[in-house]
Image (tube, rainbow, N blue to C red):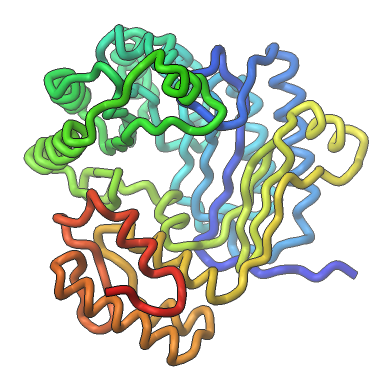
Length: 394
């Protein structure tokens, strides 16, 4: 008899759609080209996969968020997306469902398609704009134009989608401060509800990493990246956006609830090839092979797992602290200690460390909640790593 596992309230669903028209130079996510027939067959496999999970989980009244990521989820036929959403509702319920996001690239969305997604329940759109300069878009391997961005925003408004996020990248080789400032200003002119800014990182195995290794391109100077980040914080603050996470800014009440669940180390179930899941101390991914994924579900076989890990309570607690410190509100150390059943020693170590870092002006600490100071956002990785291990560092 299978044991039904409980999910923490506030859990989310992630759907991975691994389809792209072309691969960007910096992307290390699992994605590939596919025919429309292959996309429809994949959607049917995702639906079967969700149905097979019905008796494995106790999700109370259902998920609070659903996120279609990729890849380029907007390449999925809208009717297939709606069918996936209907299956989630049928399997888990939707009494608490408040946010359904679809990622899209400009040039891959139309008004009629977005209207179909909205009728299926989607109420948030995340557009991968990345830059507003044609030469930078070409370097990144992006296929859209500036006009495509404007048309996508207009299509979203016509479909009634007002909760729109724009992704932007800084630190691109050859990108100037003037380029970055103009991208921010043009993005703000489009009146999004949310902005995510990311510095370009050469992930292993990507064309960008290969170009750097062979000396075919350079890197953005570190001091310029710092200036770009601070300029974004300044301009977005003046425009009325609130920074709630190191890379994310939102109009009041428009924070991404799905990602907040990640940063609070909540539970989530992933469906689709390479999709990740995390429940309690267990986390796993499905194998990154869409043909294998479709084949297994079509033949009634178990979906092959890619990676799986069972965390110790201490490791999970450290992860919760590191994720929570990315939020501008920080994390309550006492709540983490209670949730993961840690002893006094760990609490004492974190208290000593937080007191030391507070003395340096790197964190604010009231004896329970700790959060980064704005001055330390740019050295956040160095600070977060200090919360790993048993003894505090001076």
